[in-house]
Image (tube, rainbow over all chains, first blue to last red):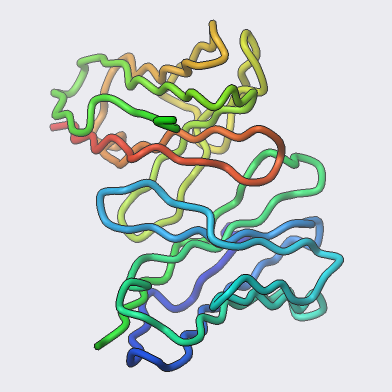
Length: 113
Length: 111
């Protein structure tokens, strides 16, 4: 039973265009969400997060949007760069276990020069 | 700061062998975690620790053991390796309850 779902295993975009990565969740008791980026042969690195009391958080080229009614969040990368090519994981934090992360299966992003 | 370090990077085990995956962090974090990542899947929590001497099970603890005798170290023990434990193992740590910092991973194959 996957509580956090990333239904697109891969995404390919042209350099300079927008990348939109999507994540859906089923548990309304999640109150914090994070995106991690992972290069091959490395551990995941934190990218950006959002609290459930917000609907948007922005950090440079990266923006995360949260739609609580739809239980959906998305990561927008604008403009996309070849160095953004990586696997992106969405993760959620339950209210009752605030140090446990529930991960999605990841989306592999390829940014074409 | 080295952050989170893991050894070894790669290991091949035979069925029934045992081994310990080492994890050390130098950020003085109280919280430490072990995850496994199977191909095409997200990371699943095996065990976690909220401080020295305190450990608890995550989603997939069967076949593993942990200990936390110091703040810095959080080793993961496999007692009787099975092919189902072929995976990439990540150790992570955090100061508080949000951002976790990950090590580079250990790729384990059980044949």
